[in-house]
Length: 416
Image 1 (cartoon, helix red, strand yellow):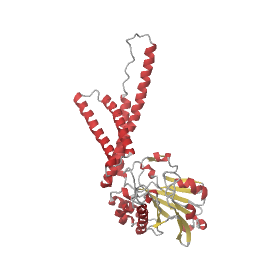
Image 2: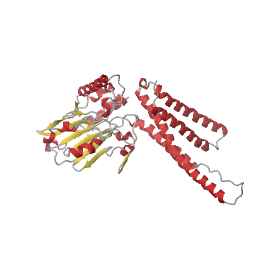
Image 3: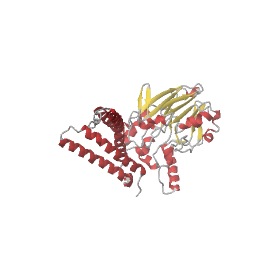
Image 4: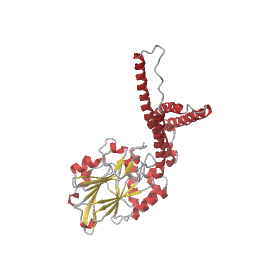
């Protein structure tokens, strides 16, 4: 059996946080009746020890045998509990710094004051306000993460009108639905996923484009959902590309051949769905005798921890003749790194990958998510000069089985 450094580090941090957190629990319960205080303290440590024990045991448990919905929920709850205590500890630490400064000031004052040898600096008590504030913030975050479980299939349509002066007349009014990051390996509710597909079809798109990450790791994750997604049809076709998760890079395969075969099987999944998979290539989309170019490349990222399988030069070659070009590229870092500097006539780029972190705040006039500190283009529409990129927030989810603030997205692009 192999231990996981990540889980051991998490367990170690949880022990330290539990001890620190307990000092505040003791302070807040100091005025309680002895019997009640004993019940609270005992309950706290029974629960905390159980969580820590589970973290230590995780590396030795075969989680693949658990129902995937339960597996992801257990993971999310454990991480949520860690974040609860971590965020609470920030407030406790601020309070302890305040106490330390006051204690030091008292020491200096009494050392210099003529108050006799028996006088000592007073004990500095914890702040009741900061203690409860820390618990409230940590508990609020944990409650929010639990609430997010209910939003993972809450598909929202984002309608985006776009104007391009060089768009051929026949394509004025073109309706494109973009979906991305299905991550079928995370799903556990066929009926809920079906409702999202029905919502797509109700938009009556002319063209459907899928921008990568059909699965988490393996092609067979998609098999229970074949009869859901094969319903996606549009007059001008359904087209797709690979994302970083589609290559099986995050799985320990028994052999290189097994990994290669998985990718070939995934290509067949796209074919059986009726989706035209674009692998570093372009093709014309024709309407009423006029054409535009649709370019699709394999995953290409400017970040070192994600692969560069794609070859845009190869995919683009020969597309110069088309008056309007749409690029499907999974990772939005590709746009600043290569698309804009080298391919200035690619009008519209469609990406996904970020999921909007599945956590953030989006209200009129204000957007925030932790993912914005990693990705310059992380959700929605961005424009530089005559070029535009749309980053879809993702149809599915991975890791955390929920959505907070950043809901699963179906993008409707209306060109004019």
